[in-house]
Length: 397
Image: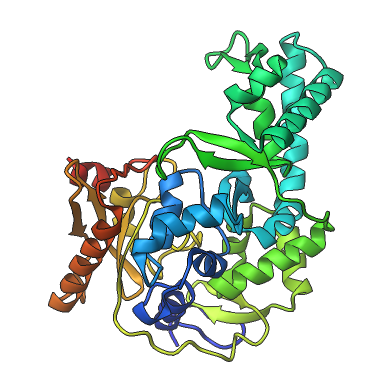
């Protein structure tokens, strides 16, 4: 055993990487049959950059040629996946059956703060009051129910009060003019009343319509937190308390209560004490065959843990992350990040190794094959990450 010792059975780096390969559908035999299966294995995919969702799912599908039509079907026709606000006030894509769990476990507290902030800002600007905003909200939701999906501009055609503007932070260096529709729709999203709908353009477009959120029961927050943690630890365990607090955005008391509620088991990691779901501590994953992957910016695997040294060498981070801590496109070999990739204007997928330890000809051949696999289904579509990183910028020129 190496590293610092926590409680329970020791789970080393090799086993953690093997678990990741199989549970995140990255090794060849573990790839998913459809986007729903892949998304369920990951629990949540970052959705603030629309292309990330498709690229992350495509990397995990047995037949990547089905990525765009099947993901579009799941998001906008069958509604088996939904794009909505979740942890840390961020937009994610979740399996629809987790909508109620995410809303109760993470959305309610954030939503209360968001609505209070909006009303406070409007009051400071001399804008209409809470009663007026409630009328506009109810009218906008009725419009959505009638239209099915609509852009903010289309909603304002039927409810002109959404075009009302107010000055935010008057006199400050960051003063700006906000439209009621922009701020209100954001609040309604966090409150779980509306979700992102079909984009106006292609699958990479960030211009989207709004739709009513799927109906779901109102759950008790503590129980919902336990259920979300159970899902995430099943996919991503073992994880430390710091990982859990960071991923969920909860208070440490909430994390500890949820761990206790699900009967999580402590294990020993190089970082100290980690946790797995009950029964998982004694079931090490079998070894995966050698595998390579090209994962997109904000991929849920690369962003899954706060403590990342077991799969990402610290010296690689300055090239692969932006100044806000968003990861760019990454190249993986056998469970660790070894480089980055980008798409050039002519559509070519290019990559560069930053860590060449134990990366031989077989690895380079596998990475080249993954680059070809990616280009085969992306085709003529041009993908530029929303958050640019140093290596991605360099490679894409």
